[in-house]
Image (cartoon, rainbow, N blue to C red; front, side, top):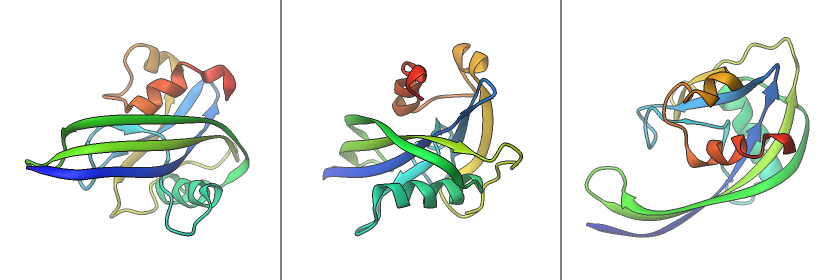
Length: 149
């Protein structure tokens, strides 16, 4: 079974602090479940990309940005099995913002019925050793360019 092409615009926060990167894990409601990504997600119709990043950062981490700046654009194109037996021609375009947050706020998932089930600061040395699990391509992209954030 083949689905039509899907293109999705997303805004993501790249938050680096104390030699750690803030990552979120995709829940069983999301795809691919169990993989680690950046806080962020789809830009809603009529929503600005910056507003989407602020909204998604809050939903997935409980954090609010203190500062942010658009740094990079990443994209991924795959034609592969998605949910169930359906193949998907997927093109994701990711706007990447360098974000700072308040230092004393502990991240926690706010939207408990969403596509994120865990948020945590992952030390960069752990990521260099393979990370907490499978990483989405956008995370690998950011890790290769950390000096920009």
